[in-house]
Length: 246
Image 1 (spheres, rainbow, N blue to C red):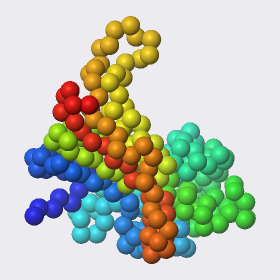
Image 2: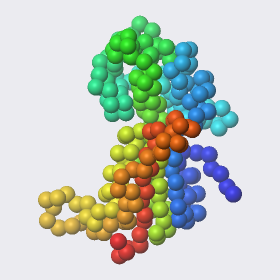
Image 3: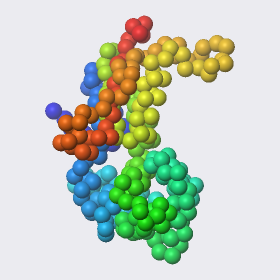
Image 4: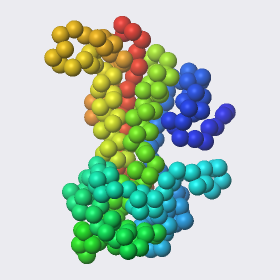
């Protein structure tokens, strides 16, 4: 058995998957609880944690690679920060939070979780709490690791790596991830993806497979009781077919 420790969208990982000619691929987009619970990794909003959030950790060879959460909040402009909070956290006050971050960093740079938490409280009010912090810290993590962009890039490559009748299943934990998967699967299942008013079809002209899950499959109450972090999980599946079989 061979293991590849890498981003699932990395060329080395995709090449290894393609060479294997898989008939089943399961993509679990969850983050390791060990990562979330290790304060020095910077994913937590517990007091004093560093603002890091990079997936690469000690012993992986990825130390220091890529931007950190600290880099994002200390350098990104208002518009880009506002998009992160609006798109990845569904925060209607995303622009106000972005402006507050920019205002505060002019006095002192953000360094630890407390700095981000205090900015959130300043905008959302003193009654804001763990659910707000978790949502906005998650949004920052998604931006740091380019999780949505990585998923968009990887899905077609994983589909193409499957043999005919192969199946791709994806477990998502965030509404943005689920939208990407849902829309990709729906598009792949369509015979024509040309613009509606285009008189002549110039696209592939056939469906690439069929969606196996009309609605996402959700965890049962018993599973959530054992693992509360499973409560946001959603599973969707797609079956690739040979030309003419749809």
